[in-house]
Figure 1: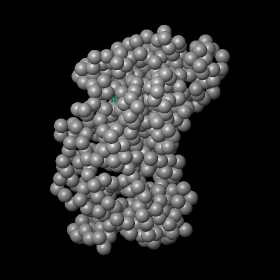
Figure 2: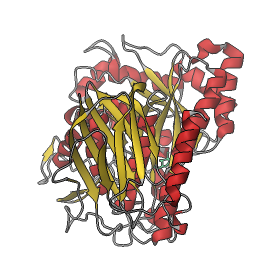
Figure 3: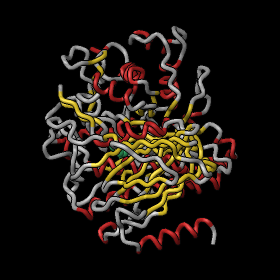
Figure 4: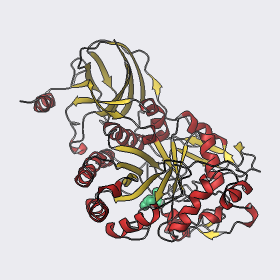
Length: 534
Ligand code: AHR
């Protein structure tokens, strides 16, 4: 029996043991000598689109606003992003990107054109009579986004338009952003917008969802477009990181066809300039689609769907390896999250705005732990979206603002950024509830920096705490322990403008360090354990 079989048999045996508060129902073994890779901080990225209330009334309030702002950018968004060490923000879409001409959003503000927003024809937004969400005023453009990133401490990640513009437009946008002060006409245009110095944008997405709203290309067709867009682009001395439009969820055929076309015609060197291929996965919603209306079975249903990120990452990676054995190209998951309907209490301009609940917090922790466990494969990820939208971290309307349970998970997990992910073996029976459909008992990820361990753990079980023995494989002693716990009595709990602190994590009163140590993971909770080893 090998180690893996032993652990599985242990888990099976534990499955029939009753859960008591005295005996360990579960074990977590940390393996410091089995590093996975460095957790790229950019795994903790965000995404903003000119969609609903994300930009206008979300990030952008305008420089004449009475709402606290920095040059028109909502101050509470900047401060909140700084707190969670947001490493990168993607913009301007999404589907909006492939209908966006960046030239509309530069130059004198009063001369910028108004366009119909890509999303104006959606059923919800059609009910809106007007507003910047429907008729794009281009008040927030390249300079404003670059400033927003700088203020927030994040790197900008631009998504180019492959469906409706040309490679030349793409070059000129890069020229506009990155050419040295005064060097080109584009640099002079940028200066007229108030920014003489280059933005030094490194991350460039070549289209968005090119299999769908981004042009309905086949993987083969897109490979040809991709090459046209990235060949002989002016770099201005930067190491530009191109991100190819990747598969929609389980569309393994896309990954095959894109990589096959790239490598069969130009050899493996054709992959040299690709930083990543962008997988999108929304785990969706359940029942009637209202974020806080779900029963126990639907709680587990959504968490089970979120957990499928594991399979997506491993299978797409395996396919990529068939064409790229050195794995020069990494995975970028630049849209992920749950996706519920617009909350019935929210105006139609704010398409897909809703108040995420604790269930969405657990979608986040399950997903971020998956990324950490695959730190060798995932170079970047961007939760969709940052504010007033799908799987949002923040909500704002006028002078009202709140962070959501999703935000709190980013806050808790920021401790993993830049650490070395190490393997941790979870030997835990599945949740003993038929409605849970075999969901894991506990799942999480572990990272280290020197002798400090960060272990994040999700307990999806709505009823039961899980008593767990935690030990370190190489004989190291756990000499210090601290826990931050995010749990709410009611899984439907959420933050609203009226109750912005209804749910938030808190430090556990005391945690006994020992080797091994015992810890009880609360029902429906996310825990960050910080352990000191000697
Ligand atoms: O995030 C909302 C939309 O979902 C994005 O615009 C698109 O890329 C995806 O389909």
